[in-house]
Image 1 (cartoon, one colour):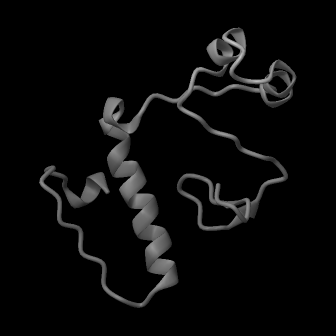
Image 2: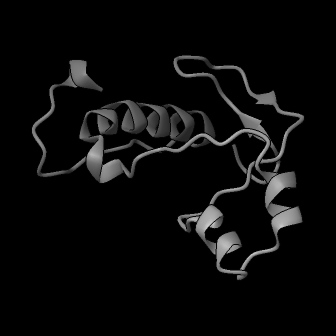
Amino acid sequence: MGEDRAFERVGGNQTLHADADNRCTNKNLEQLVREGKFRDDLYFRLHVHASPAPPLRERKEDIPILVRGFCATSARQTTSLLSISHPMRWTRADL
């Protein structure tokens, strides 16, 4: 979801708009609150629903899915041909 709150479902081709805010950090806010480095009232207002996500380097199997999505978005936005060059070995079916 970008700044305009627009997103597409995986495998979808329709742009949807979310009525939500997304706040992300790689800091341990709970620990920062305990250390007095982050306001506890703000933490509890923001901590409505935490969805921890491991970094992409730990979920390499997601890369073909993400590439497929980026390619689909790019194809809709341009008439240029898109060429993918990467050392990972994928078949066209993986994308």
